[in-house]
Image (tube, rainbow, N blue to C red; front, side, top):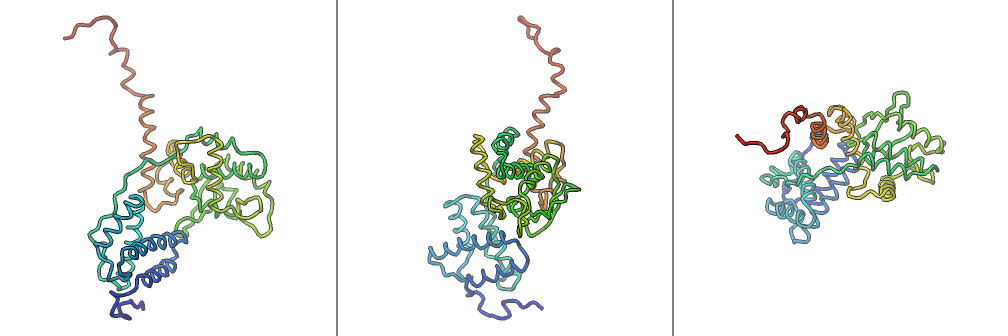
Length: 322
């Protein structure tokens, strides 16, 4: 039987914030949330703790009022951005929900505070010409073949940075052309890849060869797994060589690009949701909205009304108005 904190301590209002946070992190770990999610929560809660310290507010649950939280979120928005404030709100909401479920708090001090509204920005994407230019900067040596294959995997599969870094040789099923990737919350899914990606991977892996004790698909020149930071730097380096500007050059931009190109090529949103590993269609719909720019171009090309232009165009000269 689960024992609530309140059954062990009658003075929970004075429970130290760091103790509550430690228990929250233990809960998240036991719930098998990803390491990235747990680290994300810890980072946001640390920012909150520093805010309390800077404003001489007691670091206990009794010191956290709705007014304190509202001021903190406003400070985060002013100090950094609306996005940072929104992330802080999400973290605190999860934290207080945990404390309520455990009987630590009767209600959440966040009650009555709305989530921070964030301006909706256009998702950055690469053009097909951008992709061609980046691929053209890859050489024919080991690094060049690796980067060529990696760039194609990013644009052809839409993997997250952590997913492509964590890809191992045993995850690839060549007969069906799929990759087994581990996404958020350690959820596994199979992601298909095309013939161009298959060809690039085979050429790279032939050059890579067998490395004792290393099953990572993508490795550095020393034969060890290519970490997320190195992949991020690789993408930026090829974008710089290709002279690409005006768009955020990151692995996640490839994910956006894949999603939009998939829909433009005739893919449906439900298949896209499964490939990307989204739990709902919220983000997938944003890609669908972005791909709607093609509808305007198609209408201009196939407009039913435009076929009647010769019939309505002025014949020339002056025309009497009626």
